[in-house]
Length: 404
Ligand SMILES: *Cc1c(COP(=O)(O)O)cnc(C)c1O
Image (tube, rainbow, N blue to C red; front, side, top):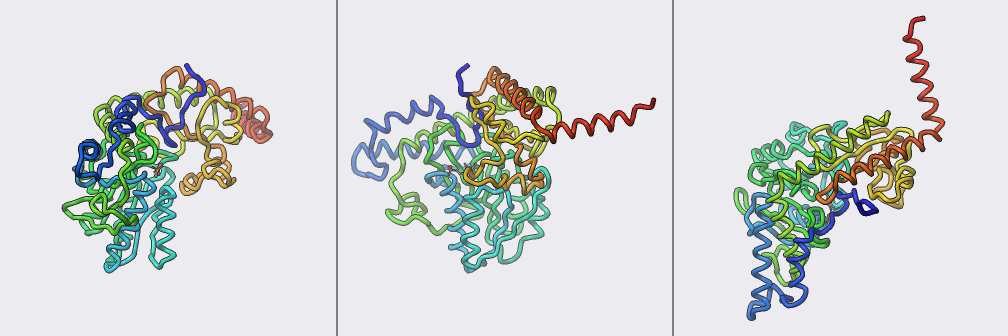
């Protein structure tokens, strides 16, 4: 086992060696511009891009012709929201979303609000779920887009996409989902879920950073977008700019591996997650699971360790890479806005740790992490006067039950 251990796979993932292998020739001999139509360098690059486009499409049950390559899910979210807002402005400017979205969605919607659009933020329950009936109730004849993420990047909650998609389809409103965390992690199908726009990111599924895609439905209905990047008319005019050929090739290979190995991957990450959770709950008291008990990403475990600062716990296990609920927007001391939206009290939000288990984690690593967390939490609690008081409280309460 090699230290440090990486268990922060919602932040980014290691490039799969098979992905890197496929990318390498496109940095050297096969360096052509995919838009060069008149020589073999261009043809080879274009053929590789088109093969990758098919692979990325297949991962989500779409055709390659519906895939627009971008620089990542942030750009895809911007293109989906700003592109729909501009193209459909004659229909209206009402948007529906929910508060645990990634900032790439929330901040883009804020831009539209400043330009006069109205945005409905649907509440989430304690597990992070949006109610499909709430989506239906919020729709108006001015609603142009519903945007609800597939899987949350902090607590892993999976939203009821198929139910929301059915409602949007019935009402003729476009449905976008940020699936940066979802695609490749569970069965994702644009037809079954009736989604019209999907944001994807290669580096969340063992591909390279700086490349992503936006799925744009081509029929039933055909979705139209105004571009946000103008220039040479690449990607059918929706996203100009010379294509990142090595990145796209890597994205395609990463998507192929995710699709072919999905069942195994789910079983692997879920088993490790259950092992970690079982060991921690056996050895530690006062743990709370953040997010949904079952409707969650298979590799996600988000726990609050009462009476312990998440940051302090991370300091106590420096050879383990995880995230804490107080450090998400690093410079600020605000606790995670996602946990706050779920109604997690501030102290518990500050004591939360996100474990993101991925393809390359092993049982030995999980056991090492568990033992480090247990030691760290016990040590920090031993120094906490609040924990001591709580223990005494529990002691006297149980004593009062014991009849003399
Ligand atoms: C990582 C992430 C993004 C941003 O993706 P980039 O490709 O890094 O721009 C957007 N949404 C969610 C849910 C993410 O997890």
